[in-house]
Length: 252
Image (tube, rainbow, N blue to C red):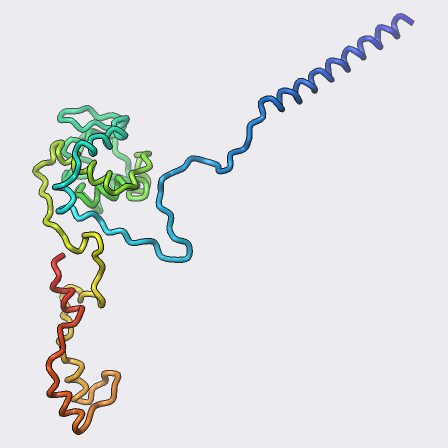
């Protein structure tokens, strides 16, 4: 009888322990439960393309206009986000990334002995110099401009910040790299003239050529003029230069 009673006690103790463990799990789960975020992942400041339409065309900076007025102090402040990997002073040591003294206008992979990625080596074959446009595109989105680069920095999307940063980098050993003349085609509001400019080696059709073809009975898309109408056509003042001719004379 006593043996049966002891067995019941042991069984009851085991069941009580199991209930306590299960209860503790439930209580702990309720206390330390975490709410799911509304949006997963981290926000990256990247422009989104308009759905169902072409991406907005952003003109590259007009370096001849923006560099002389760039804020060097703001550029130095922008470089603070690069200092975890780079230095930019003369004789500075390489870090995770190469020293950037003299990088503006210098050759790609300008630091001898630095372990550049194979992707950067391939990029150098295509664009051997860090010109203003090349640096601007790389700083905007390194992994997009040089796919496979070891540089994990997401990039700087704000153009004004990039301009100030590049202007400051130019002051660090690259002051001799020339600033180009202002380019009206890159200034805000500039847009291609109606009718594309003729390709290099080609000439735009002379004004009045279509009228001459019509008088000769050529295929101009309209019936040849006859009689008094033809006479009036030949006496008409020459037409103004076409948009394509004007576009070809625009400095670029």
